Amino acid sequence: MPLTRPLAILLLLGLLALLALQRCDHEPQSVRRSRLLMGTVVEITALGDEQKSLDAAVSEAFLAMARVEELMSASRPHSDVFRLNAATVAVDVTPETAAVLVLGQQVAVASGGAFDMTLGRLKELWGIEAAEPRIPSAEEITAALVGIGPQALSIAGPRISKQTPALQVDLGGIAKGFAIDQAIEVLHRAGVEHASVNAGGDIRLLGDRLGRPWRIGIQHPRNSQTLIATLELDQVAVVSSGDYERFFEREGVRYHHLFDPRTGRPAALCQSVTVVAASAAEADALATAAFVLGPEAGLRFIEAWPQAEVMLVAADGSIVLSAGLKERVQWP
Amino acid sequence: MAVTAVLRRMTWLDRVIVLILLLATGAAFVLVGKGPRGARVVVEQQGRVVFSAPLAVDRSATLTGPLGETLLAIRDGHVCITSSPCPHKVCIGMGHIARQGELLACVPNELLVLIEGEEKEEPTHDLISR
Image (tube, rainbow over all chains, first blue to last red):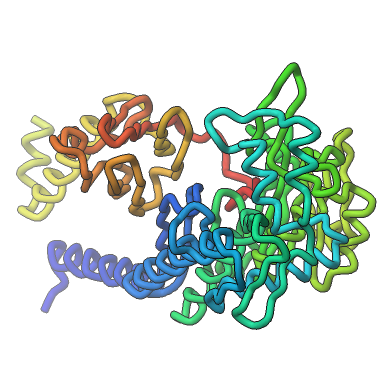
């Protein structure tokens, strides 16, 4: 049969369609969804071959995070933390909450109390996240610090005891990280190999970003529109704590949400701290501890913690990096 | 006349292809002629940005307001509200938007969806730690 012009064009179009179809088959799929959870926007991105399974895994991951919020929110009646705060005797908590308390206790002891899960009364006193925050008197602060510290909680498996009934537990410095870890665990179990979970800037990465590292911008603590640095990372968590996240100002002084348990006032030695660690719960708690400790002691503390790196921005704006981060940081 | 001669030499398939090209060109003019396309979807609640995403990436987002969950869908460079707990569903009726400066609003559920302008350069990062 002679190859007429219409036949040639039809063959060419068919070939192009076949090539396009083949290309579509091998194009990596991505699912990116956001939800408001734990008082912040949580964005989960999953990359892989099949959209439907990625979508199902992301839905499961959000459910896992919502469960952590149910268990560890201090304001939700029936949550582990709510029951613990109301209790006058020992309380049994879920394995998840017990695991968070154990890790928190480890960070609290190792940091000499710079990280503290027993600051519930102090945080309520300042009301940084309330509609009308205020500067408490010295007497009020002293009273809110009575009985706090790593020794104030006894953890025996799921059974938690408070040294004094009035003690109020606040897991704000670690629960969000734990929720991120739970989401990553769910994604991993579902077979997802490349993903990120970003809860208001606290991030954990699963694998790399399809053949290249994830590029994580670190917000400048004094200019929210610019980045102070970019890190190329994979298979780790990166969490930043800063005095710019939640604060109020009175007479030109900034009062923020990261309290020094020794003084009961906002810690003043750093503008921000970014920690890279194996898990987001660790990174979350370590970042708060390093922020309170300040650039010098904070750097020593993080360098002594296994598999953790840190970038500290001191109160004067100078930057301190741990040894392992120096080769991975890119400046703007 | 030259055009008549060309038309006489064309086969039926040539004519179909020319027609498709003309239609596609016309459609492109209509679609592109309405002003600059947006680059990002930004959702604000009580003056705070609660969600932001590029228009170029298909996704859905569940946003929680005082009445419950509002579902936002980004598809093919457009954004629309597909589900809302508000009583009159005016926000769903606003259809989809894609151009810089356009907005959708759900007043009862306190959500404002805005389209922001084109990004000038390739982003230097995938995520931001803050």
